Image (tube, rainbow, N blue to C red):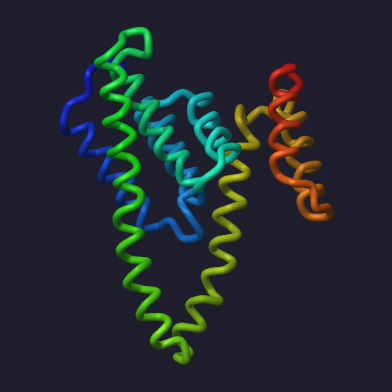
Length: 198
């Protein structure tokens, strides 16, 4: 958005995030690949850097990791208003974008989760309920791998991204085989990024 968005732009953003909310099996982070497709590739409302920074900041910050959606909405609104240098209008659109994105991603999934978990708990002895739960596990793992792949292959160029891929492999091994706190690994990634190594 390089101009003031229309009402239909905001409604479209709300509807897209609300539909993703219903597909967010395993958390909102599993829908990140489609958010990237929609916000960066199709609409051009976010830059690649804004998209990955939104996820990285929310993962480093305390609190729920769904905050990355709020940051994406904030950046969409800020871009729509012409950037932070414009002033009040841009900040108001950023706040509006944040609220629209966050409500859209939280409301449908919260209602469905509340209703479905109560029903599933009451019927946990049914074979179909147990089969559904077992079948969801590989889907969640596949969605998490897709999100990791999206963040790792930032430029889709092996010659450019090999250091990022190496860092991802080392980090994965450290998380799997050690008890190093994740904040140390995020901090190490931030230092390497600041030094221009990844």
